[in-house]
Image (cartoon, rainbow, N blue to C red; front, side, top):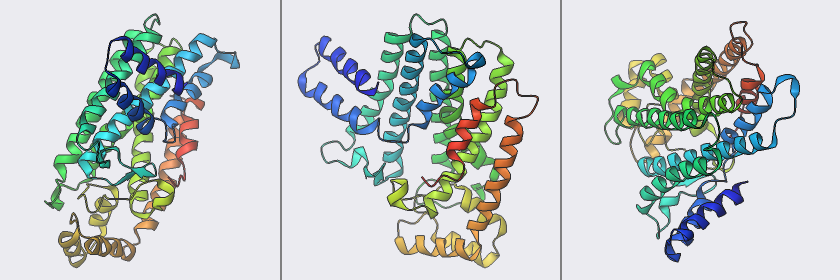
Length: 335
């Protein structure tokens, strides 16, 4: 499906008279940035369609095709976000290869490439879903979720600007707002709600419940991500963690500040957010001293049980499988 969509986008550029140097660039840029992740967001749309199919009935081939297109549109959105995010965070690697902007021939052209990737979403939706009853709702969701994610990124950036450490801003409230808006909506709600729209669900109460569950899933997922940024193996997670050097309002530092002594807080103040490997080592050594790994493991188990309870509660009229597949994929993940 990816190769079909990629070819259609390039062919449309050619039909519009785009010059060859640009079509070649777009073709290479899409191949480099879109298909090499875990693809959980896109697959969640397909999984969601199967979970919502009544009594396990076979899903219409055209409808499943449309679900696959929407799934890839979410992966395209993810690619755009990552291209931009890597520039803002001055990241080095992504998905086991150099970040797109790190290539000498790309550099800040990557900003425009992110815009191209975002625009391609609406080209694909128009081509393949304009006749769908839920077309307008899908467009609205993609716009809303992009808006929410951009605002989550905004808080992330201004809460802890690179080079300026203000530990008073590293609060649980600020952290949860960042992760909910930056991660939860596009990673979990958009795939689930897309499957619901394609399946013909119109009950707004069902979308409100899906939103509640997906926010919890997103918080769980992002806290895992923060943990893996510090403790994960770069060879496994596909990137070198930079949260400490980038002065991120991350889960580990928020929790460390809640349990550290005055002397330990002084170590964080002196070393956090510095572009210096030795400073990073001192912060990581403090995390070991505070046993932050055990703090995370305790959180992981408690959060997992809470999520299971909400997903399986009587208040949830949606099939538990709609969210269970997502939870199963992220629970105890290593990348």
